[in-house]
Image (cartoon, rainbow, N blue to C red; front, side, top):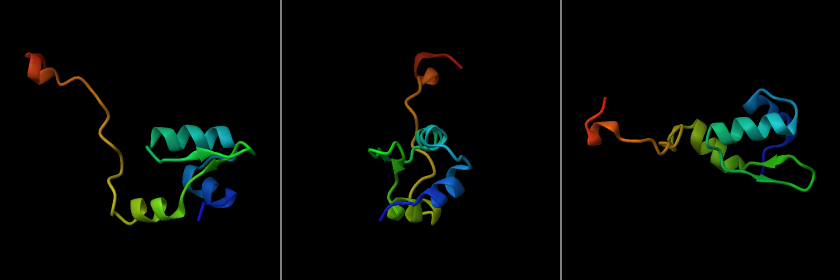
Length: 71
């Protein structure tokens, strides 16, 4: 159901929960933080994302400068 600690390390490249959390947030992976401080990431989401069924990253809200005449 959730990635275990080894799988989190393999996915994020970090060992500590704080590193996992930063990486997951930056890469738009949904997660919840457990009572032990480790993020909980659904295995099914990772499988879909890595399998190409979901976009790699959400489009972040950025100003659309072309719409206001800027470059």
